[in-house]
Length: 318
Ligand code: HEM
Ligand SMILES: *[C@@H]1O[C@H](CO)[C@@H](O)[C@H](O)[C@H]1NC(C)=O
Ligand SMILES: *[C@@H]1O[C@H](CO)[C@@H](O)[C@H](O)[C@H]1NC(C)=O
Image (cartoon, rainbow, N blue to C red; front, side, top):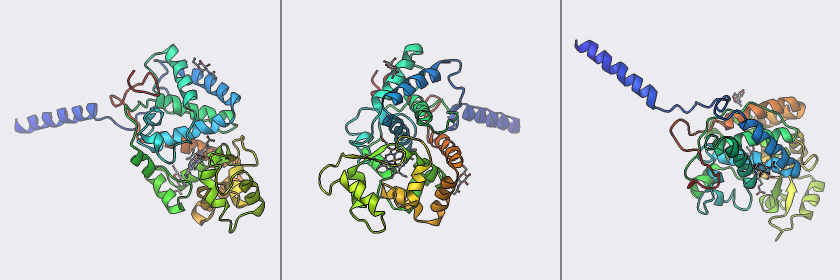
């Protein structure tokens, strides 16, 4: 009698636990197949047009997804307009862009299925479509993320996001904290085969020139003076600045990584050997990049009853 009622209690408890504990691995590529069958094609059309209008937008959208995922998980928190939130972190302020494009894609989706598709998922799909539009690989995006009601604090963002002058070990640790290993880190860094950086992010590197290619130094110094011009832009890959190819890694081999955090990848055997593989095979790079983007998209999603579906990405009071 006692034994069977204990048994009953045990099974009842187990069942309740299974029902109410949200698992964090519930994303699925078919999540909107029934509730919003045209969501993905709508986003793709919108993003493809936006990149055709402005090529740099491909880079900005890929980066936006990365910056979202690394701070508090892929929850669209970076899209919230909050002066004291993560957008104001030193890594993001005056730098992160592409918000209007994500909002327009989200509104295009809202017009066909209101309140169904999260901003976090729109951003994850936009990053994939932007990669394809720039000539990079495609992959199947896992879906079902929900949006955070609040942005992360500046402190959390500044602590979790890598910086352009972080040493290699710090970079490795920051990626490991997000469940990404060195192969993922090197592959993801290859996104810098497109896009641009502000003078303020690479000035120290080009005026502290030992070991640098002199022609590269001259070229970069010409549009990044020692004082002033903080926001002047330079391409992260000056050879093919808008093509999603493996040139980023070739640049490292020639000492022409624009950011210190780019060049350090080539400084130690562990990461150097991965970069070397990507120099030898653009296909290998593209496959690894796609796999790493899927993995990055899995960082700490809000699922089930957690979070919400924002109707406007910029704000949660709607
Ligand atoms: C390894 C650690 C990383 C560091 C230290 C880093 C740092 C930076 C910095 C300093 C810039 C220039 C920002 C500015 O000028 O304001 C930048 C740009 C960029 N980053 Fe990263 N980043 C890292 C990883 C990543 C990852 C994982 C991705 C994407 C998967 C990414 C994609 C990009 C892109 C595409 C741009 C150009 C954006 C544009 O043109 O709008 N980065 N990054
Ligand atoms: C994206 O969708 C929005 C909302 O439907 C629309 O206003 C905008 O023109 C579209 N943008 C592009 C580039 O297709
Ligand atoms: C990183 O993990 C992937 C699997 O996700 C694996 O293929 C790769 O070899 C790992 N890299 C390192 C350096 O451990």
